[in-house]
Image (tube, rainbow, N blue to C red; front, side, top):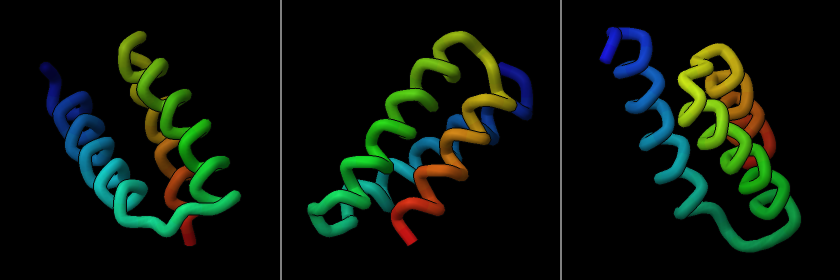
Length: 62
């Protein structure tokens, strides 16, 4: 695993934890769709797309 992939994996864990703690509602539902897209991009080893989607999750939850 490259340092960038390791950093992205750590970011995924942090964002998932934030999503888990978020109250239920439309913001959380939209954020989950972005998280699923991030998981798909991460599986495809596309770090740029993964980070873009993780940033979207963070933005939707704020």
